[in-house]
Length: 147
Image 1 (tube, rainbow, N blue to C red):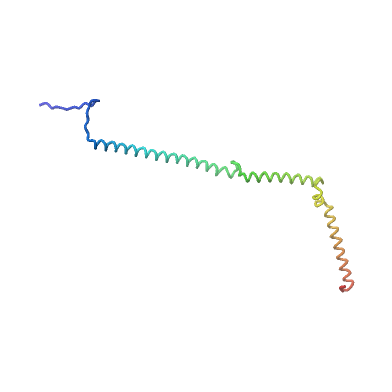
Image 2: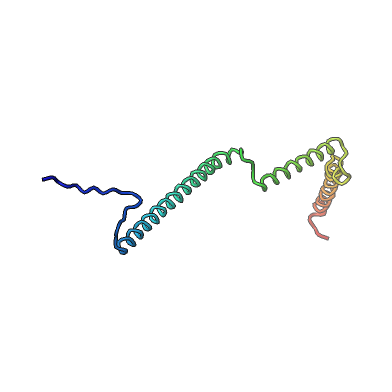
C-alpha cells in the first residue's frame, strides 16, 4: 500500500483559521514584548548618558583640583582686586618714599619727617627738663619747705 503524504504549500492564497481570542492574545503578547524591549533600551540609554556625564564631570573636577592650587586656572575676582590694590599702594608708597628722600614731600609730612622737627621737640624737652631740675634744686636749697 502506498502512503499518502499530505504536503501543504504556503503562498499568498493560503488560508489560516484561528480563534479571535488566540489572535488577540498574540497581538497583546507581542505589544507587551515590544513595550518591555523599548523600556529596557530606554533605561540603558539613560544609564549610559549618566555615566558619560559623570565621567566628564570627574575629569573636569580632577583637572580643577590639580590646577587651581597651582594658579593655572586664574584667581578669584576678590583675589585679583586685592592684587590690584596692593600694586597701587606699592606704587603710591614708592612715590612718597622718593618724595621724602628728595625733600619734596608735602609741607606737613616734610615737617614731621625731617630732623628739624625732632630737634625742636628734643630742645623743648631739654628746656622743660632743665626747668624741672632748677625747681628741684631750689626746693632742696630751701630745705624741702613748701611755700
